Length: 313
Image (cartoon, rainbow, N blue to C red; front, top):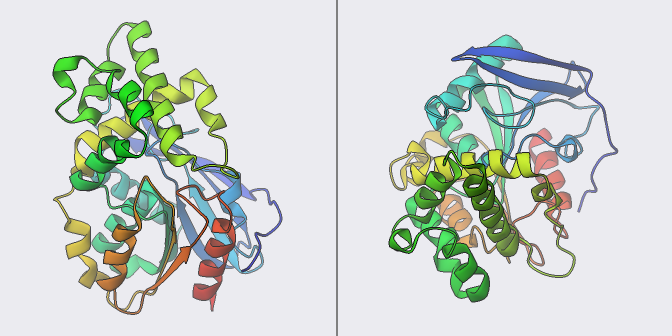
């Protein structure tokens, strides 16, 4: 497996006005004259990471990273009405035009994989290849699994998680129930809901010895912003018809694809990546045996780097 490249700093950065009071924060690193690649972060709400810069050969790629609406260093109103998947797809196109990019290789992980697929299916002429890791398509079936079904493997943690919302709301959509608590005007209520939500995410994503600690959840402001965005998107199933991305895979015919997935990914089971792979002729699926959902799990970074390299030629 190919190792990550050394740390690198951006050679350009800026903010792009999107309308609705939003400012998108972006950066570019690597070779300004190289092949352009776009990185879509997970969450929703995680924000861009310095680690993702290191998946690309800096001599061959011009790598663009940005923080999606409401995440990281991107600024905007707290009202989430103008924060939807169609808005994010439009933002990507606005950034592409702003940076004068004709087309690009797109990489996305977890929620970023959903967004990458949705963008590519809407704008296939702008995508030269896709690298997806910790693959998810944000269907209601997947959301029910990650908020309820996987609780069979974590019964104690799931009971704590379910107890974070009123008893009358525990049989319905837990993402929606938590979203209501997270938007409650009382800080005691919404901060506790953020803590409970993020404790659950950390429990199911940290698969055991060697897993990366979810240190980002230690910061209260990040917890709240992250949990509000995740539950907002999940309660609406990302504004996508059920299985729309799977059914739309013929739109990607001729676009090369690399999928990287951890065998022990409990948040997004391997079946999703397998189904997409089967529906995407010419795609390659790499299963990383000891890894879970996190790109910092053993073997994941190396496999992602190898997937990028496979499309770089």
